[in-house]
Image 1: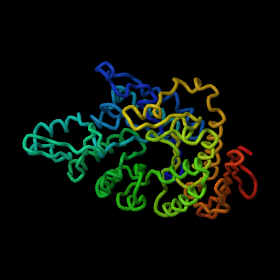
Image 2 (image 1 turned 180 degrees about the horizontal axis):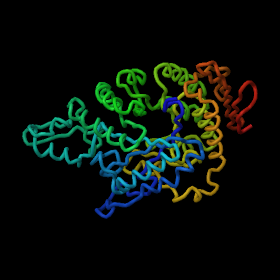
Image 3 (image 1 turned 120 degrees about the horizontal axis):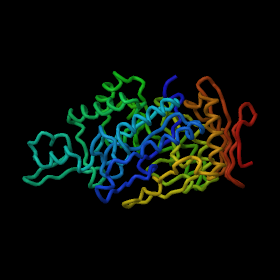
Image 4 (image 1 turned 30 degrees about the vertical axis):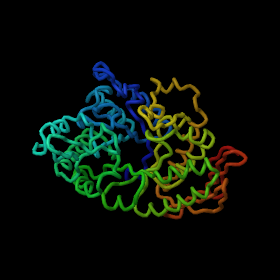
Amino acid sequence: MSFVDHAITWHVYPLGFTAAPVRPSGPGERELTHRLPALIDWLDYAVGLGFNVIQLGPVFESTSHGYDTLDFLRIDPRLGDDGDFDELIDAATDRGVGVLLDGVFNHVSSEHPLVQRALSEGPDGEYAGMFRISFDGETASAETFEGHEGLVELNHEDPRVADLVTDVMLHWLRRGIAGWRLDAVYAVPAEFWSSVLPRVREEFPEAFIYGEMIHGDYADYVRSSGVDSITAYELWKAIWSSLNDGNFFELEWSLRRHNDMLGTFTPYTFVGNHDVTRIATKVGPEKAAVAAAVLFTVGGTPAVYYGDEFGMEGEKYERIGGDDEVRPSFPASPDDLGETGDRLRRLHHDLISVRRNHPWLVRARVETVDLSNTAYTYDCVGEGDERLRVELSLEPSPAVRISRDGEEIHGFGR
């Protein structure tokens, strides 16, 4: 059985989770602080819900939020050190949990030592070719990622960049991780990954490697790059939008496209992550339960963003600090949650159990049985013609029924 066949992921943003200072205002806030082991106390919580993979957001030394890397081979001192990382990996491995890291390989911090050398040494300097920097006389101008001044783009045509990324990926795989999330692959030529990934897989053929892609031809990128999977943003949008608008026709249309993708790869599915408004804020807690039912019954490798399993709310804003609400700290222990979101948390446990008892759902296609604006019935059909029926309705109140051979195996709201 491959990683994809059994992976159900709990996605955590460590800097937020551990209450590390995301925008350090002085050297004292960058001092070594052993925060990473705080995650160990939550591993049993994750396993108890049914998760067997932890996707960590950035853990490497960075300027601020983690996506502005300073050193790919050093744990951010705001989180801890190599010993803390090894302790977390050992604890996860003991519980049968795989750990994925977030690889930000499209850009680095403008304060990265090699960027600073490239800027100071000029066009003939040793490292100028590794970054997208233009020189005009004594003036240097770095190309930035999507206009973010602190993020300088790597030049993926320079073979040294491919060597750097390969070395980084191999380093952490050798340290015990199960694979990688590749940040912003939509901005990186597929040909770059087709040169890097075979070198990585030569040593770690089972490593799971997926990319963040918002728009574009997902299947073509998978074929061209060699990544295992792509984030299913199209399905994410259809889920919350159809619930908000009372328009299941949008979801049905998206699931037909999703069926087509399953012919090429198994999409990485989700209803929340570190970059978007929380699903409970988008649609409310009752409809968030319906969203979870869709997530765990359609084909894909499902992931839940920490806190979504109990209905945590948070708005994403387009401003400095606009991610803070969706990247919050967690209590020291799961016991401190009390009964917060207990009903939705039990629902996630039960839906994951349905998924575990029907592992063929990972590649299941959806066949529409009945469809209206506010009610949608579909069959999940496995490659061996296994079948579950899912009935979604929004009126008079959100409800879900999942059945096998006419017998209900899970339901709520009726």
